[in-house]
Image 1: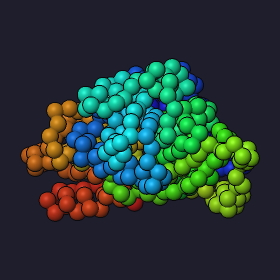
Image 2: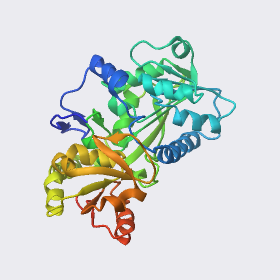
Image 3: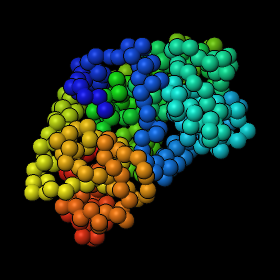
Length: 369
């Protein structure tokens, strides 16, 4: 979490969103090599990670089927979960990954996954930079970069002439959680992602929706682009025309929807405090991304949370709160349980907790996915 104002702007000409102050390469290098503990801060995460990356690997492989590469590079591969799933789908391929965060690299190597520390745009390890690849893919990285076009140009130098580039990132056509993530410097619709690829000299071949999380609930909020290098006989790529959903009237409508979405987050703390009126002992169910959202965007409510409850066991803490197994919840005798999970699954989790006799506080009516 970054305790700073959330400041983003929408382009009046094309409706692309970017942070109003773009972090430079040095700041990003420090963040993603020293502070970005994404792969070690979610207790009992294995049950979620496995499903997510299996689904993403299948989406990546099917997007270029029946093509089967011999050399594959994942850029920003984290702890190697997706790379392991890709290797299982393409067992004959040589698969390698590059990741800036040292602790994530260590986790990957401990699991026997071929991952090396480095960062696109800066010094790449020799194992990565000295080769060309049939497939280069990157999962939810481009939105974090200082310059998406420069990022793709760097990947272009690593791709074989007949190779395929596959990029996934959030789909900003409908306002969703990605727009309020402080580390997302750009929010792109499918048009914007294709346009960035064109500017980098790629030819977009296919644009589809794809999975993002492990719950199979967020296809419309994530996108996948397949692109190639132009052939020798091809003309230089030209910028695609602005689609109907980004014409002036629709840009204004999208701006209003995005503004409302961000204002909904700004009001989350006060709304939840009202729902917790009279409650003294408060716990949160969940320690995932949406519980993190609660901790960040509802700080006054979070100060009242005594513990986080999970279906599992953990001896760690979550944003300063002890983690308690669900089997021990009854002993705590809470006045209220905040449902700190994806809004799409809050009704199901809420029903489970209510059947067990707990007073629950949902907020899926306040914030959409």
